Image (cartoon, one colour):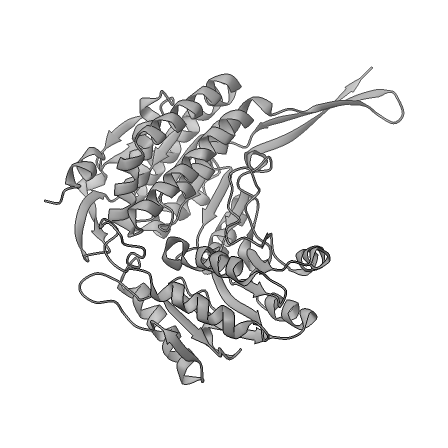
Length: 485
């Protein structure tokens, strides 16, 4: 037993359907592993197709009453849940570290970030409004109102087990939507614990239903094609997102997708290099590099490339790799062996094409799925990691000399989630911000995620926005009423 086994034991391992914790059909379970050791951490219910259908039935039956609930009541539930999550920061952080791998300090940061979506949307719940106007001919009055979309299907990823849930669940509760949530099979414990918190603060039965399963496609596809579902929201790979969009077309579901990224990180010759290195550490190493917002392609002006590369490599090589539960660890394990193999192959491909490893470049020591923080210079444009999401602690640097050329190269990807650049020229700030074909742009900073801002991408990085004033609109329909005089 580990020192944190009691935290895992606090989590209910069953399905949460219609306000009741229940076993999966036939008592089936799936194993949750600790990526720092490769060993088993817990077993949770493994839902069947019938279990998924039961969850949608519960959400559908609860929808009408929940839609009629007072906005202030929904707001107070979110506020109470926010406060309880903050109170249990250590428990949530330990769960995330154990099931996902990120160091405890970073996990605590996710609790602060993730809980903030509940506080933000607690405030937005009471601000949903329509409008009233006079028709141009004066004969009719025009009224619009906002109403909840209805039962919503939510599929969340493993890399931010709490925050990717709260930024979907928060606006859905605020808008008056019920939901079926399917967390990633790798990291279900954080979502199950969040469901316990919402149950504890009085969220009515059937509003939130949580289905854990090893058969994501088999369980969710029938729900996507079910006419009782009215919205689908997904965070994950573009490949899976395309499949889900195709499935959702049959029911013409409202769909929001936060998909893959291939973020450029541009350092211009007039940049504050120390600030750029600090920003690069955040943009690359947040969440061990396992983030859709992670800087994937570094473009550094030739005049400052040597200084930036030297300072960046020094910072990367100073990081301590190990079990995230250990004090002083900066970089935890990747999620599984497959992730380590992918990063290993990408580095090998780059070096075979002429790139040079400045620091790192290989797997970590001992058990678990570790990869050492890596900096590569001289990355050729045809290397695989110049086109694919790395999803690991590897930074590959290319150089440039011309602003128009680097913008062209930065935009030369099917993805369009986020781009970063560093400069002290504020005319350039506006030019480059407008020219980058991305849904989000970070200027002189390495983190853009903020509950008060609309998060989302363009092109193959998806559509729809999460967070900000825009976030709740994804869960609301606009109804127009014409009033004849």
